[in-house]
Length: 287
Image (cartoon, rainbow, N blue to C red; front, side, top):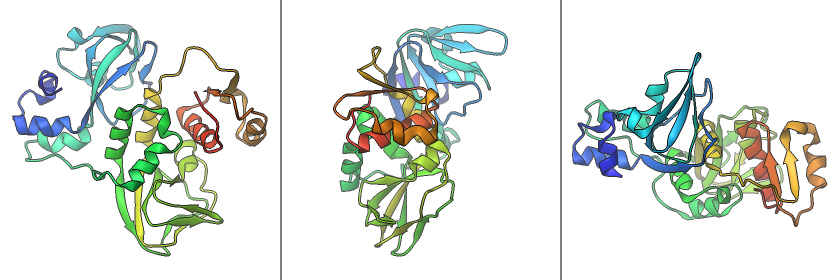
């Protein structure tokens, strides 16, 4: 990927060492046709560089088809401009770079911001083996882990409080936390409904021991849904969240057959991801 990165305008003047540092914050993605890369008004935390395939850029007055040759080494974000939508016309390959992390290099400083979470520990293994993360390919795991911020906490600390609107999905890195009768150990996550579906936290979460909590920004997790490649056909059960209110969710889940896969469709990405987590925690296979 290093030689390809050098063909993109922001990185053409970097030294080999600086370019290698950029590589640590870059991912190669392959996405099918008819997939949104950016919806109107959606903020992006990464710059997207088109390597192969064709995308459509929809501005206020026209739709323009863009190939990798058309970009001239610029990012799709810069080419599209503020407010434009980008979607795939064909299967595409893009390289996504977290420019917030590498901006120090582009501004002439000596090093990029290091990922906050870099050590593969037991909690990471548990997280990746748990529900939701099995939904995504390994490249998604790597990018998510780089977005995490580790926070040291002490016994008795209030991690999130009842009624709060969390901006992060929280994962126990070490130690244990409790919320009523529910306990969270290394690899367990919580506050996802608040962060992704904008619902108030249902109950206080308090540390039972000293430990580490890893916070993942909701905006980064929401981008993951764009890398989920939904199958073209539906399995025997389909749950369309556009026709189910939040109040109806428990009743609808109770009517599903647990031994059959569930096709989860509709609603916004945050609510869809929360429902996927809810179903998979109860033993359902979600596609």
